[in-house]
Length: 194
View 1 (cartoon, rainbow, N blue to C red):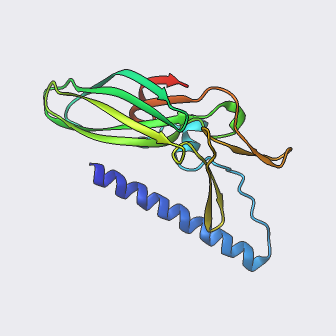
View 2: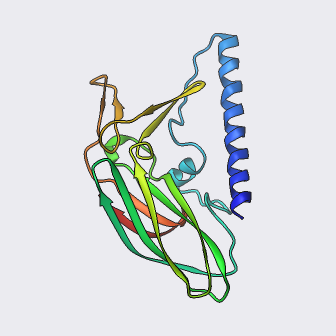
């Protein structure tokens, strides 16, 4: 299922890339200006923002067993943030779970509600448990801005900086960052903040 999920995501990403590439070339050819009114709300981010519940949400996976999550611990070391939690196979069959970590930036950042920042695949026997650790380095905690063909990745010494238009500078949003851990974007099992 993990490979199928990755393939679907890659196909969607490729379709979006081709759409924006064609949109870009059409604008160059006609001399018009491109307005990206959707901002950062593409794909699952748009549906989450608009409260749309798709049949199979982003990160959805089928399983013949069930998993429970517990013991969320978030450690902020200054240069990275370590998120640790426990996953237990509480079902009747052996299975694989792909735990996902979504990050919510402070409202002042202007970022989508939840942004996927990490995932970990674990195989568990019936009754088995494992401690899962996902480390958010400065790279994963970045804000990403798409500019035509390239992506400008902004990395500073702390969590995340965003472009502030009035001051024409990069600033770190003040406030609390929230970590969401779950089986998909709509199936959040644990929540913590830092």
